[in-house]
Amino acid sequence: MSENRVQFATRLGVIATTVGSAVGLGNIWRFPFEAGAHGGGAFLIIDLFFIFIVGIPVVCAEFVIGRHTGSNVRGAFRRLAPGKAWGVVGYIGLLASVLILSFYSVVAGWTLEYIYRSVVGFGGVESVEGLHSQFDAFATSDWRPLMWTLVFLGLNYFILSRGVQKGIERMSNIMMPLLFVILIVFCVNSLMMPAAAEGLEFLFKPDFSKVTPTVMLSAMGQAFFSLSLGLGCLITYSSYFKRDTHLVRTAGVMASLDTLVAVLAGIIIFSAVFTFGMEPAAGPKLVFEILPSIFSRMPGAVIWSTLFFVLLMLASLSSTISMSEISIAYLTDEFGMGRRKATILNIGVAMLLGSLCALSFGALSDWTICGMTVFNFFDYVSSNILLPIGGMVISIFVGWVLKRGIVNEELGAGSGISRVIVSLIVVCLRYVAPLCIALVFLFGLGIF
Image 1 (cartoon, rainbow, N blue to C red):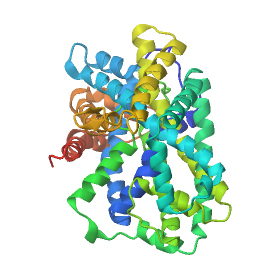
Image 2: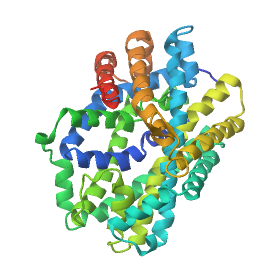
Image 3: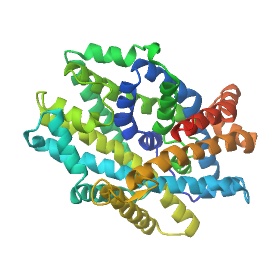
Image 4: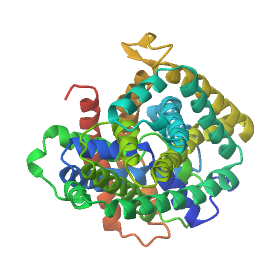
């Protein structure tokens, strides 16, 4: 590990940044509609199971690689396996981070639009049908989605250009506590709703009769993607860890808090959905069409709706910052580029590709790649191909290739973690994680 490499200043910063890299739209947007579509409590239990047998071990694997080398995702594999093909995972992570940042920023831009719409009361529209028409008109227009995408990426530049400690760590220390405060306020309000008990029963009382292979694979995919595995952002962030950072404990805390956010989001959304007689299996439109309709019927509608979309924006921002840092660390480490210049290049590329994604619902809707719009193509390639391959390679590399002494040293260094736990993590990386990730990969491609 390079002694001159910048490091996170505090343990709070380590937790806030790593949790921030995981917490995103996958927790507050994707988890509720996945759980709603796949049986609620049963989906949650299966999701938790895979987080512990796949998620935490792969997080530990990325932490081992990052802290031991103190390098970016490409440089880390070059140091650990010089001249070997393992380094390709670094390029996979870099490509995936650029593609995800591009289309993810479009959805994050929608949250900015909906903060504005919440403040002005959605023009007096309250019905789901009316809000659906509003959303379609907005998403398929040209300049507003594009404008908000560029504004959101500008916020990323503002934070990233200030560096690791003064930018990423400082903002994470503010955003993550604020995000949890907003979540708790929402939960208290939701639990006071008339049908809150029904929502809680749906979320926490499992109905295993609804469990199918598709449900299990969906839960496995949710666990994998919710923690941002296979992307390389955790390798990058852990390269800023101090030697006394407890890797296993940090991975456990990160996974627990990430799951907690998803569960709290489920409590909020399902309590409201059952109270107002909506459908829990509503899918992605749950956030931008059904929830605004619900908020409009609540006392203090403007406040609750605005707070919710601020919550989504904060979650999105913490995730995109970590995605950007993958490329920025690569450019500064490998090419000696100044941080500000590297940040400008990263955000500039994201603005260009993000513009194509933002316009793919409108002016560029006829411009397709393999029969998909630019937005859908970036989403498909990164989520269904690059991330699973990256996660599988990282698992196999740490489980089978990396010297066991390095793994033992990094996972046990200064943490008092027993060799039994380290051995269990290695077993999961060798056998369980690759098999599970392979199933998700084949499922995502429609083969299995």
